Length: 104
Image (cartoon, rainbow, N blue to C red):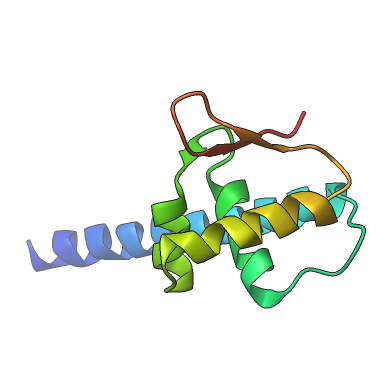
């Protein structure tokens, strides 16, 4: 049974590493498809990465605030700046609050 547990644990670790790699590849791939008017700040880039990772899902300001370790009120500034710096109109307001990243 120890051998089975070791194999199972190794399989789980490999899957986690594969998931992380595929997410980072898709983030880079999607970023390469976007055109920017200006360079993004570190925080704006973190916000964009979170939107990309949650593409097609509602992202709330409180989620972004937790990532940036800032109050919610400050997050709206980064979303606004991100919208103005990206040439594409890809960050939409969700009907029941929050924002949705949609890239066709």
